Amino acid sequence: MNIHEYQAKKILSRYGVKIPKGMVAYTPAEAHAAAAMVSRRGPWVLKAQIQSGSRNKGYFLEKTAGAEGGIRVVNSRRRIRENAAQMLGATLVTMQTGPLGKKVSRIYVEAFNKVERGFYMALAVSRVTAELTLLVALSQNEDILKTALNKPDKILKVRLDISGNTRPEQIRQVMTFLKLPPHSAKHLESLINALHKAFLENDALMIEINPVGVTKKGELIALDAKFSFDDNALFRHTDVLQMKDDCEISERELQAGRYRFTYSEFDGSVGCIVNGDGLALAAMDLLRDKNIGTACFINVKGGVDKEKIASGIKIIMTNPRVEGILLNILGGFLRCDLIADGIVSAASEVGLNVPMVVRFEGTNKERAKEILENSRLPVIWADTMEESVDKLANALEEAA
Image 1: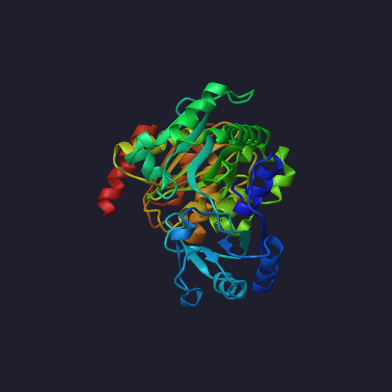
Image 2 (image 1 turned 90 degrees about the vertical axis):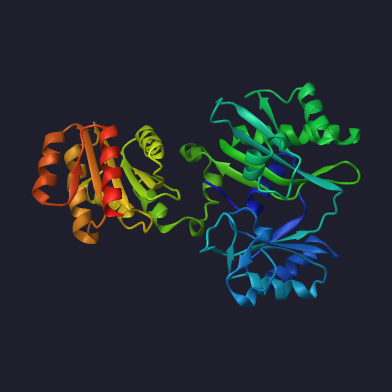
């Protein structure tokens, strides 16, 4: 689960991270009033609150929103209301939102903080080493993913202990890498330890500050903030769960969440239906070996009925990216015949106009096969995961 910038900053400030003074506003009038409350004098920074990076480089679909991006520096308080009116209710497109963009329902009015320079800092769990890793980058304006691919020498990776504070040698390592002045050392140590504690206590998956501003006095200030939480641990954080913004979540993902299904979208062409994340990852790897991308996958879990299964399958069937469907079910708590009934029910409502390859293994496998054969749906049967991927690849080639 992700939250907005102003929410992330509020959490980080509780751990001692220095942030600019700011207030969220939902109307131009609120933005105008907020400006006076956060700073007596300008300039002010107006930030569109959508869960996306590169907001400053984004553009609005509506002409009335002006030529400027989703982050604006406004020098006159009289122009606050005008800019807020342009941004609120408009659709902001960035590199991360896709061409449809996201609607701006709130903006963050923040006091402008003059800094000497800035840098990138993040905490994340390394999927390669399964360790908590501090990431520090010299660049603050480039896309961090592009930096990682094209200029890896610009990113410093420091392994952090799960318990305990950052070691002095690690602070010195970061100081040297960033070429920070000596009087920033205590501020850097305080920032890293605050992020570390916030990460662990909130069951985070990632905390990102881009950029961290360095003031003339050597202080470090979080000029932006992102916070991503582990969905499986949200039951321990009801205060965080209340920050969830359904407007930031696609309708398909929302519908999947109502049934406690896991749903993820990518930019490929195949929809995967599984009952285990491991099965999804294995299928995605096999598809990738054949240069076939995954459009989405849904993990349907046990303890569901035919109608819920049908609803989950319809989510995949109605995704416009999907050109083929791969269904891979290991029947245990979730019976294979229940899935087969769900396929028939979903197809009767929305149709089945793309190739579907089905592989069942486990409880009531033969009964499931019989249900699909009697349905006369154009379903392709496979006995192994490898065979299912091969058959789907062939079906997609024929359809093309």
